[in-house]
Figure 1 (cartoon, rainbow, N blue to C red):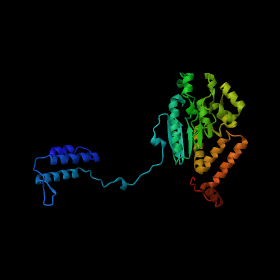
Figure 2: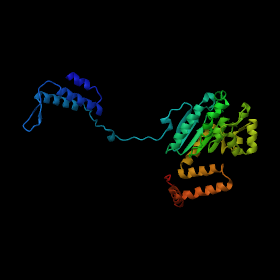
Figure 3: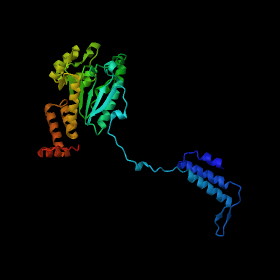
Figure 4: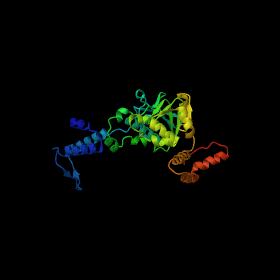
Length: 349
């Protein structure tokens, strides 16, 4: 019998396991040929002594097999919380993620041998990281950059060359590239050093604010490959520099420098070197991160609407958003702090 109980003891003691154990025990007890059942004077069932002895052994065995509850219960331990980190929750191969300043995330393209050429796997990782930072309550602004030598030197030709019209059209090739940042409500700063050609130029133009080095090399050279920009270059570049200059750049494939990018309004500012560029981008992101999230999102929204609406409609839209902010707590906090010459403590409501 001891061997039987040792075998049963190997079962994990779950509700099902305990039920099976009890069933086995009662079968073992009452199937034994130890005597017949009788009755006392009041008609209650009475079992022979040996049967009662086996029942006691069985119940004691089951009791001993119950798992002991540790004194270190989860509820008695302190709960440790950690700040959000995309790099901590996801390991990427083609990009690097970090949080160099409070409230600021940085994404760095990381295909050095290919000069950060864009590919579907890279765009997939970039999209995932952007969505993680968008969902994080601790991140308020994002900086996207590449290496000193190349922000992104174009799209991966090896991936595009074999495509046919039917495959590219039916599978909506590059659609996910052109819509990469449309869901972002948080400001995105693109910091460009080195080459930003083709898809790289288009990616740079997706930023809400574009910074670059003076020696940065922008361009849409797709015409030289028998094609045209496919991820928004013809639209965003035209919005930045005007139809005449955009037409010249796209139809000739001519590149332009960081100095020209600043002069033409493509870039907000240009810098002498890569270190100055990254420092300035992070400084600007940190400044934005210090303001009310509600007001920052509203400001980004109305500026972006200027690209879609007529002047009259845009002004009307701006005014409606302006009026709506008077219903926010941060508007009251900001104006009160200004009047009292105090630092506002935003609540993002």
